[in-house]
Image 1: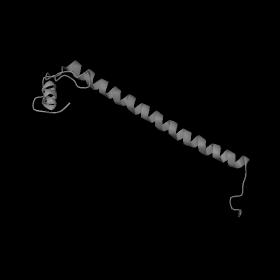
Image 2 (image 1 turned 180 degrees about the vertical axis):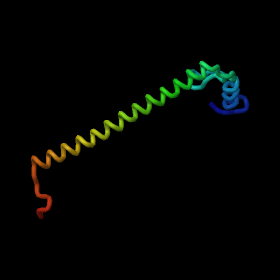
Image 3 (image 1 turned 90 degrees about the horizontal axis):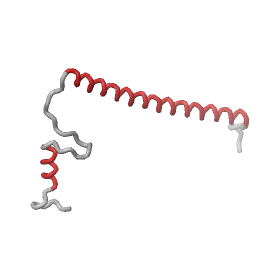
Image 4 (image 1 turned 45 degrees about the vertical axis):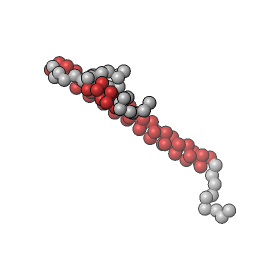
Length: 91
């Protein structure tokens, strides 16, 4: 679709965003009210828990990668011990 004066897509989208139109979950409706004490506490707890889970998952990924590298080094050492070769010998 073209962005013509008769069909101004950008201003239509801006008007919908300004009016608080919900775009299927990727934008929140604009809500100007202030949070109450219990609601603010719950929002903050949810936010902390979300980042705790993200951090825990990232730590698990890092730990897995470290262990995978360590296992590979151990396997290389085992292979070198089972199949000795003189790396200093002229070929």
